[in-house]
Image (cartoon, helix red, strand yellow):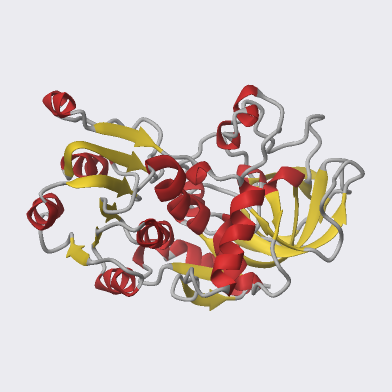
Length: 358
């Protein structure tokens, strides 16, 4: 099958043919219909995940059609329309038993017997976070797959595989935004714009969106932000504090030490900063210790605390009912031939999410 393969960090992915293994008992083979290009993929491409073996197939936010299921897989059959996400939990460890599969002790991203799912001329090819969706087909752990209604457009469904569950989920499950709260969202890519929608759905009284790109701020306003701040033109902390006096929740979507510190500085007394953005190995942050006397909190969020087979069908139904806007989240659409250029240009992209269709 055709795939976009990363052979060296900090180099473009290269289109080529690779081999896919037969389906193991707990696996599902999916024909890729669409996949999003996320900053996490760029993070992996540039060496932000040193544990990633090379060569590798990036991509982790996808939708498609089930081709084949393993002997031990239940609830999925060939022909099902599905979302694939980096959520390959074991289902039996202490974290999974507590309903926190994102912290699974035995996160399933490779086969237990060590055999590769993908190969290139007989050599193993790694799958980014156990998915590897920049390919015509995916072979993944069944717990990474959730069904969606056949009426759900698969290019929109792909957004549910990361951007929506991570951003909206951080608002719902991790931060716990409540009716009447004030919220700041730092960074308005696909994840940040999903958080804006989550804050709207939660009934936040004021939602301040912060970004450096006017196009993304306009999208945030269209999706329900009550205020926008251009961080390239003004001090975002001062602007947020002037607008709100300090927010109940600041959600950081960038993953830089500077923006994490800014999110914390935007808080009111007893406010919570939730870090969703992916930092690089070795990054550290410095915060004013006295602010802790005001009972301000800093916490992280992983995959939005998502219960994949509960949340994905819910969000799909909300989209079909007109209650969740995925159309504005989808920016450019490219074929696999345009994937490399889109991935390399993601830092300059003005749209929320570029979707690759197959």
